[in-house]
Length: 246
Image (tube, rainbow, N blue to C red; front, side, top):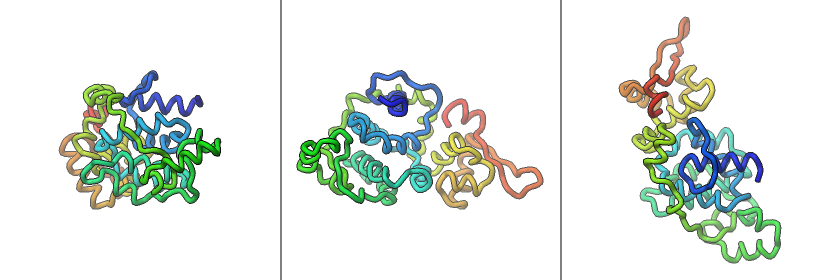
C-alpha cells in the first residue's frame, strides 16, 4: 500500500470509518479529504465504499460552498467523474438530494471504463464490470456494481465529534456557508487577509459572506478588524472557535 493511500485510510479512520488504522492528530480538512479520496479510491474498493457510506450518513458535515470552490481550483479533470459517482451514490435516499449542487459541477468520464483499477487490468474482469454495472455507475462512465452501504462499520456520531470537535459546529450549520468560512480560515493559507479573499476561499459572494460573518461574530467564532493603513478587513478564528468547535 502506498504511503498516500495509507495516510488517507488513517484520516477516514479518524472520522470513524471502519479501517484498522492508527488515527491522526489534529483537525481534518474534510473537503480536501474528499478530493484526495477521488484520486485514490479506484485503487481500493473498500475505501470508495466506506467513503460513500460515511457521506450518506454524515453528508451534512461537508462544507459544500468550499467543496465546490476546491473542485474548480484543485481537482484534476480526470478524477472528477470518481467524485461525481461517489457523491451521487452517497446522496441516494436523501431528501432533498444532499450533493446535487456539487454534482452539477462534475462531468462523467470521457471514456467508459471500470471504476476500480483491479478490474481495468484484466479484460475478463473489465467485461464483467461492464455487464454488472449499475445504472448510476453507467451515468458516470465508471462501471461498478451497486454499492451496499456499510453503516455497521461506522463509529457513532458522538465518538466522531469527540475525536474531531470542529464537526459539532458543522453539524449545527448543516454544511452552509458558515461552515465553509470556518474551514477556509482554518485550512486555507491567507484566507482571512481580506473579505474578498475569504469570499473566494469559502466559495460565496461578498454579500453572502458579510451576512454569515455577522452570525459567526455574534456567536464568538470569528473576529475581524480594519487592517492598519488599509481599507481591507482582516478576519480570524477566535480562541473560542479554535479551542472548541470551529
